[in-house]
View (cartoon, one colour):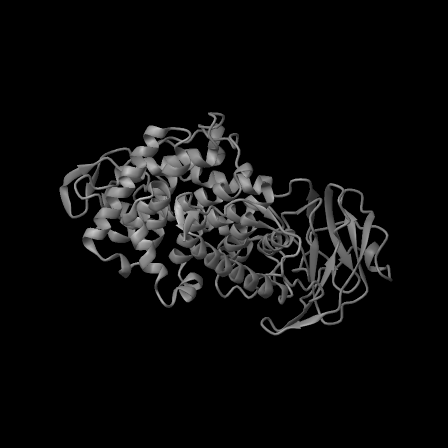
Length: 520
């Protein structure tokens, strides 16, 4: 059975089955000493607070970036013997502005600690605050504001401009990251140094100024998906040279990478060169180092095909000629891939075929999709294989003729995955899916991408709350009280010598994905 089945239209649902347990809790660390006038007070909360930055890691864990005025606001208390109430204090005048209940502690087996939660949702007045309890002292400071994450969101989006290669970055746009144009000379093929090639442009991916085509394609595709899910979150005034040109800045940024990726396509075979690498001599300047281009890679080629097809789909309303160029390049890359290996040997072919079928309606791509849909373990692949998951999401958005039963089947898989994420988060005393950080940032960021996608198709406020709780976790409401998102609060990843989300270009794209829900 076939018909046009585009499920990427938001549906408001009031009765979505999602169990959210709000009374879980857990255990503690030492607290900072309060100023003398606070330490002398007894009872549930002091009448005023003369705020000082805690000298020890607090056991009251908050989102150091801040909370949105009208959103749910939660604090985690670490410690077995914490009960009663907590106070929220205005740092500017030291006055108590809110008193909340500390919920019953619960033992967190994964972390070996007792945790309890406290909510202060009714506090909506903008300002800078801290939380104090007699048992564990005060928290780090935080703000409450109408748009708590806009600055963070813009900073994340602008990371790619800061990483641009091949052009000078002025202080007007880049601030302290300004520099003159780099890597503007001709590069040479690693496998044949006599061949020179222009590969100026693109994004630096690390401190060695490496530009990776497969990674760049994955990042660009995540940014394009984020734009598709929540277009109103992305503006045309983030402060890059292309701002106010009538095109959302995120699409301008992706196009900058696309221009480079097109240069990295072998004109003879349609394959994509794997990377442009700086050949830095010991003690040399990475920005002035010569560039070597590594050989064509099938991973890079099929990743390029997928992203370029998606880009062409969204860019056609702004520049149909360039969008057509991108689509033709995607088609050539897909053909190159099939000339070198079988589609069934790499699930990336499924994702690319979904994008190209969406853009063209060609039976060639439909056949590849059908081959994967017929796999007996497709259900498991949907959960375990990112390419299958993302290709399936694309299939749900196709305006071409598709199988309605298949759409229904994919929606059930997506809902099941989302409900599993919600269930895992509800059982955590930190309200997240990976409180112990076993998957680094990857598990949390990809889980939230799944929820963001589902939230787009079937809107439910609980999804948004779960996503926001994960932002709270990354911004300091975690067992170490570390803000992994910015370097501008009282305890950040820099202080603890850890890696921050903003240090990894692929993680930044996934952070933008989840923040876009909160900014729309």
